[in-house]
Each structure stands twice: as C-alpha cells, then as structure tokens.
Length: 407
Ligand SMILES: *Cc1c(COP(=O)(O)O)cnc(C)c1O
Image (cartoon, rainbow, N blue to C red; front, side, top):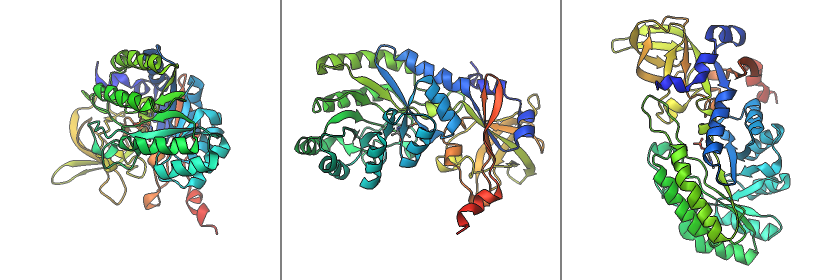
C-alpha cells in the first residue's frame, strides 16, 4: 500500500474550498480516522478489560476531545488546565487520569477536589499525599523502569536520566510510605516514551510491572501508557498493534489469575489516535531559488507546527494544488525569523506561488504546541465528520494577542 493511502483525510478534503471558506493556514482533522485508530486498539485488545485514556496533550481541541469521548475513551491529562478542558468537553472526573510531573502539592489537592484519578510521580508528593489523605483517597503510582525504548531520544521518558516517574529501584521506599500512611494504591502506571521501536519492549515492561504489582494488593488497573508509533513517512516502522495484543493479552490475563483479581488494562495513546487524522494546510507565498536549493516559503512556520524544528521530526509534505505536476526538489520553509524548515530536499509536484501544501501527521502535537512567536496569529481548526467540514476553532485576531496586556 502506498504511504499516502493511510490518510483518508487527503481524499475527503477539498483544499481550495476549505482555505476559501476558513482561510490559510488551516488545521484540518478527520473524525473517521480517529475512529479507525480507536477501533484498531479496542478490537486488538478484546480479550481484556481495556480502557483507553486519550493523552489529550496531543490535541486539546474541545470538539476533538468530545469526539474521542463519544468513541468510549477516558482522558489522560498532564495539567490541571487540561483537566478543566476535559471536564468542559464532557468527561466525568472519574474518567480522567491526572499525570503531572514537577507540580506543587497544591495542584494535586485541586485534582483531588475535582475527583480526578491521581497519578503520583515522585516520593515527596507520595509522602505528602499519604499524610493528607491516608486511605481516604486512592492513588496510582507512576514508575520508571529505566528501559530505553529506542527511536528518537528527544521523546523518551524511561531512561536513567529521565525526570519522569519513581524509579523502580525505589520500590522499597514506595511500599514503606504506602504502608506507613496506609495509602490505597489503586493503579500502577508507566509511560516509557513516545515511540517504542519494538513490541518486545512492551513485553519487557509488562514483566517488570507485574513484578512490582505484587507489592500492591489493592490494584484495580495497570496503565501501560503509550509508545504506539505511527508512520510519518513511507517505510516507517509502526507498532504492530495486533501482534502486540496477541502476546500481551495472554500475559496480562495470566498475571491477573495469579494476582487473584481481574484488573483493567489501560493505555494512553495520544499520537496513535490523532496524528494521522490531521493535516496542516499552508499556502506558498514565495518560491525562491538560492545558490543551493529552491525554497518554497509558506504562510506558516515553527509557531504553528514545531515538531520538525524541535524534535527533528519528519513530516511528509504534498502539493495539493498541482497533483499531476512534474516532480521537483524543494526545501519547504516557514515565515518566522528563525531557520524554521519544515523539510529539506522534498520531492513535490512543481510548486507555484499560491499553491496549497498539506503537511501530514499534524493531528498530534501540532496546534497544541503552537505559539505566537513573531506576534503571528494561530490558525483556525476544522473538523471533518461524515464528509462535512465545520469550524471548531476560529483564527486568532490581533485582539487575542493584546488581551492579556490590558492591565
Ligand atoms: C504524552 C504522553 C502520552 C501520549 O504519548 P503519545 O506518544 O502521544 O501516544 C501518554 N502518557 C503520558 C503520561 C504522556 O505524557
């Protein structure tokens, strides 16, 4: 199958019409792709009591979050603000897992007041939690297994130098606090990073988690985080969900039998659900031949999609306006006063000024990581459902930029 075939959004959208109605640049999302991804997970893991907690930092658009909830998912949030947005999107507090790091105990208390499921990622907070709530409020514990998952080192969280989670080697300290303060630990959590290269890593992590779980008799769930890798380009490795589930389900059920209770299996996909569902449409302002390359300069930049510059991530780019044009080589750059290159040496159908390009895999960590650098405004967002595009966030205006300075 050709790479672009896995992007049904490309067949659904009419770039000229969309940018005429909603302007450019424009984030466009495709509901049915999110559904396809969600169902791929739930179908593969049929053999267990599976709960999907959508990691909404990938895309916090309210309508996207509502849509994900309509599929049956709960939420994973990393800040109290994301939790508030989740509640606004209709998620019940008990469906939301609060997984912050380096936050004050005050923020944890707020999360308890809201009724969120609390996930604790350091010893100091665990102790404060125990003194404050004893066994009145349960909590989940985030462990760090120190497994290197491979792949892009910018987005790994499980390695030895990582700030995330409580080291699995501190388990004795954890159980000491738990038993002294009589904390009710209802879940164990791990998130080894954003792109696990090999499903054997998941299995390795599972073995470690089961080992740790034996120290906590009141568990209701084990949360294996995310790490599901999606393709960003032709030939990219992706997590084979079905193969993974095949091995994982029997391991998990085997452990539950030994543990003496049926536990829920949680995953927290972010990019797996929404990455391929989104594109960023941009317009070519200038075509500029330098001594070394031909630059296609577009009406967007690192302010709207920072992954290529921040993570050195590859995002595939297509010229939608000239599909049968002759292939040429371009360097696609943004309009920010920085070297904000979306892609070097890309083969694109001949690019003319005014053409609309699509930057793929923009559904995750696109808008949610955007900013106003160079005092540029954020684009609008459109959600296509049943073939119907609708505006789900308006374009920013200059007033939006000035509002917080009206003091
Ligand atoms: C970011 C994050 C996720 C989601 O990661 P993806 O790579 O987008 O699937 C899941 N869990 C936690 C705790 C996270 O911080």
